[in-house]
Image (tube, rainbow, N blue to C red; front, side):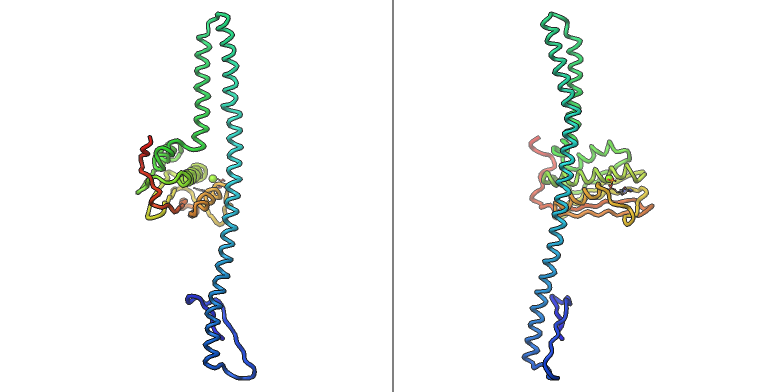
Length: 275
Ligand SMILES: Nc1ncnc2c1ncn2[C@@H]1O[C@H](COP(=O)(O)OP(=O)(O)O)[C@@H](O)[C@H]1O
Ligand SMILES: [Mg+2]
């Protein structure tokens, strides 16, 4: 009987029997132990392949969920555009035709023009709100800490932002971290009944880590069904080869912690020189 190991890890055993009660010669023993060593490699490779396949499946599933979420987002945008800015612009066009007719008839148009100016401002505001939801302009121009601080002002719980060594990163990385923090903050506002929440951003070596910690009610992750919010956060991190964990217990507050690899070369200066 020979143990089958790979780098010291016991993976199985190789049993060899000879007819009668004959024992193995030293050469045979050497042969069997060599085969055992080879078998270790084979078993290890088999396990690695299985692990790789499982990880691939997981990745495929998370990609699919991301695509579905993006489709849903597009539908929401289409609805917002259709019911919002598009309606406002159609109304503006009709009003403009009316003003045209009034002007042609030599009638006073100043009061109507004033109204049209206000309507145009409203339409612009609608479009701006929509654009902010798609890709926040502050994130593109100033980076994560400033964009999160800008958002924090609109959260009903006091938010403290601590950023340590955080620069500029590729757009999709910044967006992933930003929207994860937004979802975590939204959960705090919705569920935590917290008195404060801290967002911590930290660039260390080749990874960027964020935590969103509140001092609220907390929850039991084992018995609380995961919602689409947590799934989206996990998917966003996974898509960038990162990780996400949600630490919570009843009465002990909640911490969402995500980490993504980022190469140092990717960081751009905090102040975008193009601006
Ligand atoms: N900061 C928090 N404080 C307390 N409970 C939370 C917090 N974050 C999440 N939860 C709990 O986890 C559940 C799942 O959250 P999430 O995945 O974001 O789903 P949802 O889409 O319903 O917000 C919530 O319904 C809530 O019970
Ligand atoms: Mg949520």
